[in-house]
Length: 209
Length: 245
Image (cartoon, one colour):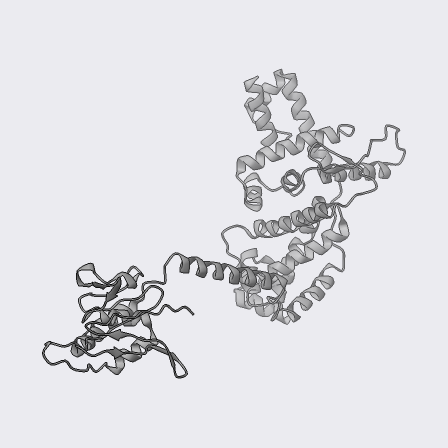
């Protein structure tokens, strides 16, 4: 607590303004000096969005937690190299996106074969055979769970270049220009990929739409 | 149809799939295809959003701090990993290849010391060159010249040619004997006063002229045996011993 107060004073926060009110850039300035209180604040702000984003990308909760932690470790260790050309959220999503894509490629090289996905799509990627159950379910919780799983599987079956764009747009709610910055693509390419991803999702989730 | 494509594109890119601009709303009111497209997009977006978001576990920060402490503990030597050795090896190999390429391309042939040493050494050679033919004298070869010859045959080549400015700019010092100054005796080129050259494959340099006497200038020796020596005189041909190391 003393550290938090000290850093708040260092940052010029006084009275009603606390470290919680500091902007991401201000916190990064302090993290560069190795301050862990500011780092904790960054973690508190972004741990859930980053974990959710990576989970949507790789569809593996345990691994997504590990990669989210790796994202924050990289933020801490490379804080001195951070340049405030973009917003911090763009920066952290870019790191998380790169880690998630690397994980997907590593899995692809190892050729993980799921017992539930012996089929491949036109792009050569494994898709899960999960035909929707036409029988009505009695329990609403089961229905929601089934729908959630179907959406997760549908997103996970997308090619990785479409997956990152659609998750950032429809799950995380980022704007097109922010997504373009995160993925280092042109805005037109991002729009094209999102459109293509939605068309694929519409085919996979036609039973739920 | 073109209008429909444009409307669909704008529907797809809209931030809010429930409320569109006036022109889109007016078009979808009359176009079933575009209205269906807008409905599908809205349903898809709602389906994706409705799925529960996952959150980080409760012990996320504790796990993170444990990993961070581990990273800090290994930080001083963290750069000494396999990737570092791989990069260092690749950089070394690239440097070696670049050096070989530069050597083969002749980048290192032009020695700047030749131009700087040439005037001084040439003046020393001129000092020992005879001015008259009547009194043959045993030339005294300057020790500096001899040592220069012993040190570097290429550098000595610059000392011998009195009329030249700097030898071996093109790296073929052995071809600097000009035909006008070269006499032939049974096919053996004679070296006159002030002339020097480099034999094929070996360096032979005459710092001066000795009149009727012969001068043997050992240039390279191993133990007591001279490997390269030079005879210079009026009737004596210069002897070139090709050497290679």
